[in-house]
Image (cartoon, rainbow, N blue to C red; front, side):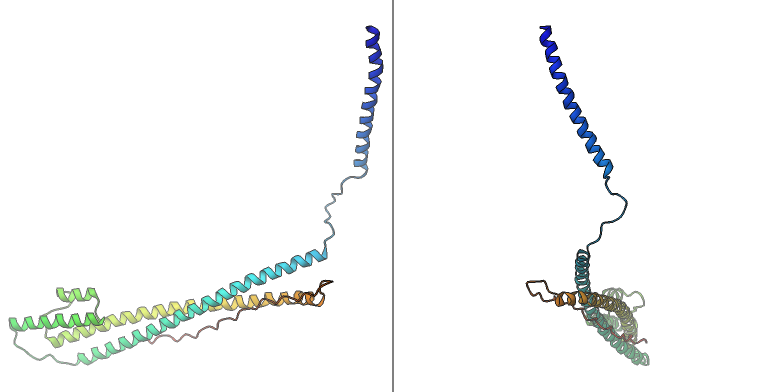
Length: 260
């Protein structure tokens, strides 16, 4: 038995030593290769591919031209809509001015009228009150008096005195209508000014984006022309049509509302 153990020890130990020696030599060889040929990491970039870079540049140009063209078209549509809004506000301001001018002329015409003398009796005062209420209701239905002003007339407050003669009531009513129309014209003129400012800003934005879209399409044309001159070998490829630049909406010339 001791001889068998000794025999196996003498046989297997050299084999294990040979295996470990082989593995050690293999590891040393790999290490030597890595040391002899280290990985290049000197910070230098790989040589760029001109064809790939040109293709990426053209793709960026096309994408940018498309995006700017869409933005320019939207800005042009917005500018047209703002111009239409300004034209509507301008017409409203003109109508408000004409209404105020008519009320001003009526107030001046009534200002020179003298109220005749009538007997001051209860029946006369009742008739004057009915006349005031009737005139105020008619003015309200015409849109010359607001609901609040009509309430003041019916409540006999804020200067509305039913004891005055109907001629005097007409003067007071004409002045109230004139002031109401003046306020309406002032509000319409302010809306027109705001609409004009918005239209000018929208038109300027449309002009800027249209110029940018034209520049982007113009920058894209040389690349497309190069593609058309040098088609891919084996087939003919027509150059794609450049993205057209939308026309800029001309700015409207503002005519301010009349002041009086």
